[in-house]
Amino acid sequence: MPEIFVSKLKQATASHKDREISLDTLDDRICFRDEDEDSYPDLFDSDMDTTATGIWKVIVVDDEPDVHLATKLALKRFRFEGKPLVFISAYSGEECKNLITHAHPDVALILLDVVMESNDAGLKVVKFIREELNNQQVRIILRTGHPGEAPEESVILKYDINDYKFKVELTRQKLLTTVVAALRSYRDITTIAQQKIELANTLVHLQRTQLQLEEHMQTLETKIAERTAELETANRKLLELATMDGLTGVANRRRFDEYWQQQWQMLAQQQKPLSLILADVDHFKLYNDHYGHLLGDECLRQVARSMSLILNRPTDLVARYGGEEFALILPYTSMEGAIKVADAIAAEIHRLALPHATSTVSDRITLSLGIACIVPQYTTSLQTPISNADIALYKAKQSGRNCYCISE
Ligand SMILES: [Mg+2]
Image 1 (cartoon, helix red, strand yellow):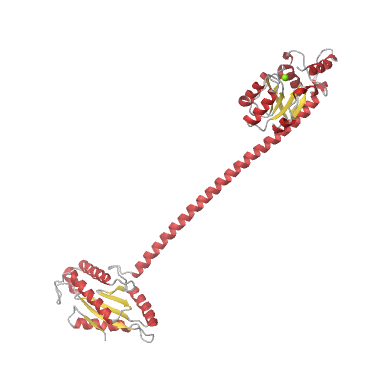
Image 2 (cartoon, rainbow, N blue to C red):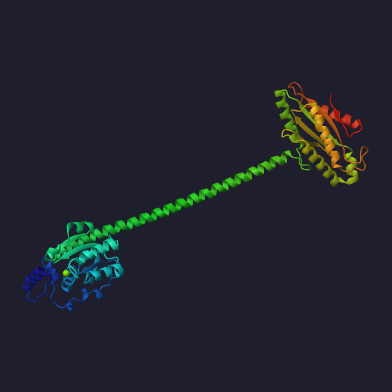
């Protein structure tokens, strides 16, 4: 124990015959003890539950056992914010390092001697706690009995030391004041640290929720896009079905009417020729009677496919006009061009060579064709070329079939 501290202790002690100062009368006097430690069994570490919650852990670090007991005596019954102080003793800097690293990282306050195994052992402990353990929460009060070993101001600032006391100042009242200030500071620091953790957790939770929300939105958008695409496909199919002949796959009569009207109006405006070919399979009733309806259907499919092969301009249209009759709309096509198309179709049907044993005109399937061509006028009915082509077709049939006639 430093000399000056010891002499003060002795002065205080001398004034009491029984050499013991009760805690109640210590108030502003120097704490001390020179009795056996056994007189204060409840102050020893072995009797204190350092694992309990609702306590303030205080490590007393000093190479002089008397200082430990004096400190504990002074603070024995003290409670801060309703919680008691539990003392842990270390008698060297190294022991303190070990305790705070392993057994007691949650210590609130260290009352730390400066001079122990070396002149700066206490300062090394501070450096270790702040820099190596990165523990910025624990409060540290430095105490020294060697005024000459006082740490420099820069050390106090750098290592966040709460207080610095000479041991000669160690009255109970002053110690209490210092400890209260340090514990209050520790409470605030840990509360802020806890709030920071809670904030960080909330932030993580929020970010996770946002991410889930974004993923959910993404999934939803993908699903909507898929459903939209499915709907579009379904609509397209529906439209195709509504405009397609189910047996042959070419346009149906409804589509023919619609397209004819469109082309009529457009070419009337442009004053360009519009041709129409009506084609009829010769003696198709006899074909059906002889080969049956299944082969009859197949025959119509093949005739339709041949016509589609010949008409390769995107504006041309092959339609099933009814029964075994087909209609070909040829926009921007003169009579001369329409005749070429009729010839090409007849040749293609001939090349198909679908046998027709009961036909009176050939041994294979043939067509009769009627051709009409007109430059549409707003004053003329759009039915006129259809009637004309029909008359021409009738003429072709009258002329012995397997030929075409034109409407003059
Ligand atoms: Mg010392």
